[in-house]
Amino acid sequence: MDKDPTKEEKLSKYPMTSKFRMVDTIGVPHPYCITPKHLSGNRIVLDADAIRDAERNHGAKCCICHGKLSYDQHETALLIEVKDDRDIKEVGSETGPGSLHEYLLRIKEAAVKDGYARFAFKQAKGASP
Image (cartoon, rainbow, N blue to C red; front, side, top):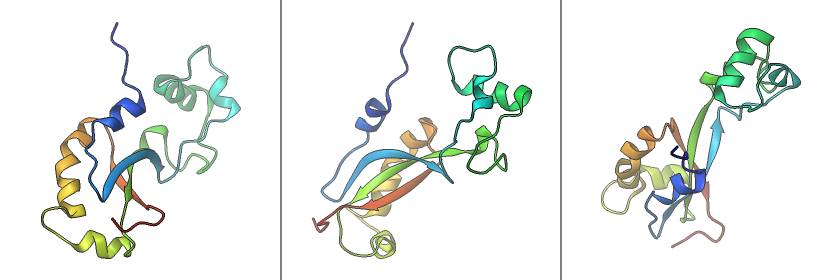
């Protein structure tokens, strides 16, 4: 039986540059938050199927949005650390080699294949490359 890759294994395949590196994933619009109702079924493992079953059959809902979004409507974004002191909008407006735009185009296909819906950004401390 093939083991699913860990988050770290998935993230390690994304290239790192002097300005950009993949550091984590983040739930968007927020992480899906489990409640006791998610644990009321007959399942031992709380995986995606168990969460969907709990929503369908036990009235379970994300306790952050109180069911405004189903489990499947919660998405995961790749969190990219940006090593640049400028505002992220300014960094993102550049094009060409070494730009954030070029980096995102380079990783887009792998991100979609891995099921990531978006990209999120955090500025590195002491950022300028």
